[in-house]
Length: 171
Image 1: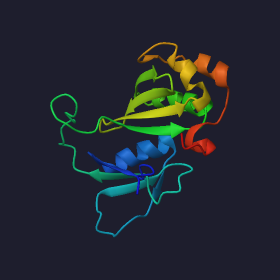
Image 2: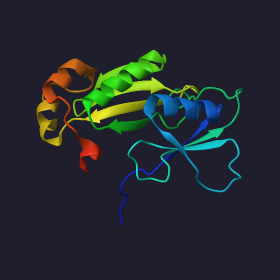
Image 3: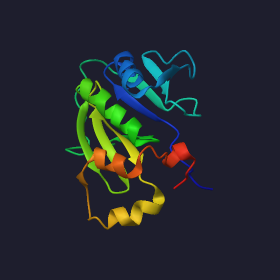
């Protein structure tokens, strides 16, 4: 017995409809019908190319909800990471997130190239591209830790190479 992968995540948000619109417009998710009709105030979304019945569930808890204190004063989830297949897709999402004022950071984790953003409820998420596994060792020799993301240099090195789950890789 073993876990294969994360199937879906559920988030409590201020307004599920507004958050769903954001995930649809910016990340290309689509709404799906899941579960019984008693899920009032809930929206279920499927990521592009996903084979899951849903990848994200959003449950409204109201505009008065305070921000998450996870990692500052309470335990809790820091973020979810959504993977793209190419650096061009990552660059396109960088532009979309910037245009929406949602982009809050970008990092080179050596084995992945990542963008960080916040949804309308202020929940942080990551969008990342996975470096080809055969290049991990060379990337890690560049230095420990996290570096600033130089997406243009990464695109010059790997072009539009498809990696990770999009390439059918389990690594």
